[in-house]
Amino acid sequence: MTLDPGARRAILEACDQLRAEAEQVLMRLVRCPSTLGNEHSALSEMGRQYEALGLKPFAVPTDVAALEGHPGFSPPLIPYAGRDNIVAVHRPREAKGRSLVLQGHVDVVPEGAEDEWTTPPYEPAIRGGRMYGRGAGDMKAGIVSYLTAFRALRLAGLQPAAEVQMQSVIEEECTGNGALACMVAMPKADAVIIPEPGPGLPALYSAEVGVVWAWVTVTGRPAHVRDKQAGVNAVEAAMAIWRRFEDYEREMNDGSRIHPSFRGVNHPVNVNLGTFEGGEWNSSVPTRAKLGLRVGVMMGNTAANVRADIERIVEEARGDAAMKGAKVKLEFQGFMADPCVFDMQAPIVRMAATSYADLTGHELRHYPATGLTDGRFFQLYQGTPVACFGPDAQDIHGIDESVGMDSMHDITRTIAVTMAGWCGVEKA
Image 1 (cartoon, helix red, strand yellow):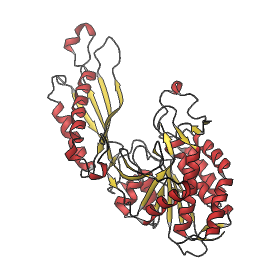
Image 2 (cartoon, rainbow, N blue to C red; image 1 turned 90 degrees about the horizontal axis):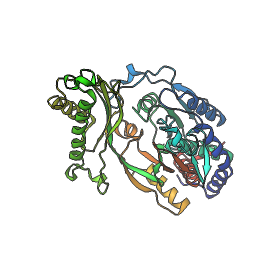
Image 3 (cartoon, rainbow, N blue to C red; image 1 turned 180 degrees about the horizontal axis):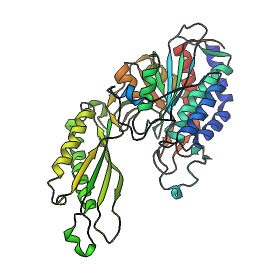
Image 4 (cartoon, rainbow, N blue to C red; image 1 turned 60 degrees about the horizontal axis):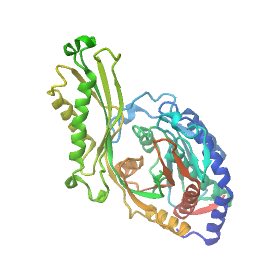
């Protein structure tokens, strides 16, 4: 739909008026330490934000029994009781336009070594035009952008002339099951916007790898260090298994295996030893060690195939000299996610890209991501086009994570204009 110039101007002026308020909302969200299992404070804040928009929030549970047969389901790490996703729906007086989902995840990864942060990770601070704090970039700024965009329409005396779903979901960082639950529970919309952060600059996701999480537990035979040779060192055995995954990573990044959407991207398939637990005492041969692995999945491959590769690698490692009879247990919990290519010619994607360019004078860079987003669910399993783009974030998952305030404002304005053009508008 063509947006009336006067309405467009009023919406953009409202975005400008709301900028300071948006920064305060982001600070409130960053203060919520919403790591895995601790999302309640952020979900409650999102409920309050939806109510402030005049909407009625409601819970969407993540029901394992209902979802585990879905091809997008991943085996969870912890139970879902008390961790329901929060959703709100705007319904127009007369539906004339196209419906839209505005979605974002409230969960954040652990802060790491807190003493390495310049300011505490859950005490947001603005320095040099950037807000610092865990989750500021990934992806609470994007959530604030869509909230503020909707609020701007209301401030301009308007509202979308189509249904708009707002979804605050959990576990984007480990399973995506929160997004899957909402997608299954809610009516199919005409398009989705997910304001995930760009890679240090504003970007539009064009593709993303899949991911499999695996856990390898090795049990050796403990002994006093004086009888070291009589023991089986579980840590050494576990590291022998890890070295095989380093070889696998090199194999998966061979140019012949890289999908055209990732051409020019150096090393797109990453295998990460993310967690390690092992040993009991410096003077004892360690009994047990556990590896937490994240294995990337390139387009043309599947999560199921990579799972089979992991099983094969672990089985082959049993013959290594370092194992010497150690027992090995392999488990799959967390991501079992397939890769995804987004439709960059979809009308919602083109509208968002055009809106951003018109408003800023710059292009949204196309970004084939070596990580993943919840956008895959809508694209792969529902056939709903997804515009996944967001503000410039730096050091996500690292120390001193931050997001640019100017960039967040640009994304707010882009979402507001895109939502108005996509859904149409009516008087509020």
